[in-house]
Length: 384
Image (cartoon, rainbow, N blue to C red; front, side, top):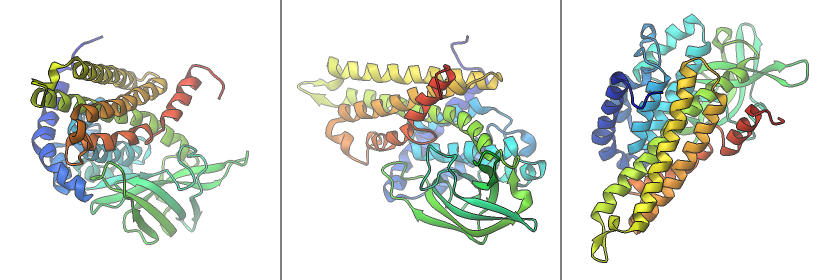
């Protein structure tokens, strides 16, 4: 075991930390309150190569790995989660399915733009009647005359309606298996394809500077070659993507949890009450100490899951543990930081106010806490 990052990882971490502190933190509050997508910040992230971190150089990537992406996500989320989730969804949900399962032609056609950040990808899994039960997909895709015809509705899709969204890969029932279950496949639908419409833009509790929309497909036709991976393997493929994505979401959650510590330490040294800075009092000291302990523990959990993944070892259980522990830490730290700040913590213009609003979705998105517990139990051999 090692107790520090390699020089290369540490250089990346510090670079993103400085970017988040000097470029993201001063500007993001305005975008957040307006519910506006931060195109200039996303463009700057693209120029830094963040969208290409885990992809090979031959496809326009940086030649790094998934842990490098996680380090970047943690540092971004210390300042703001809307920016961090835009990167996470674009890489792990938008581009990674093409990298993992796409044809060589699909990779060369799409990955260079996605790696540059000039274009964003999205993944359409969740439906109005199916979140955790993603196998109950009602969207259909029928193959005839060399084309897929897609019909259905997807909801809560990140990066699906921006001016630079280039594609959405959707899961759809493409037939019926012998046991009666739907045959689920993944179909790539380029933005602007006739029959694909961006529906309602949600009014969200948090992540207000990220893009989240409903997508509606009405006789939307794309070539047969737009199948991503094997026919009938779309659900299995996406479960692999989710396992990886849980490590990324855990890193994002750790960033939010650490951001709560950063802001609380700063505020505790400035705010005075009863003749002392509030950091003088044990009640505040203990609260911040507990926050730091939670962030540290959650960081170790996602480091471990990422290390197992990169070593080619099984990591499903460790990814679920990391996501569960980190999302709990984010929620608990956001609540504690709001208490440290008192009335100011209840104000939307403060980072802590945004952290509190952003934390809850981490216990829901990319697998609820209940799903993580179920996965952990199954990996321990308990009945499915």
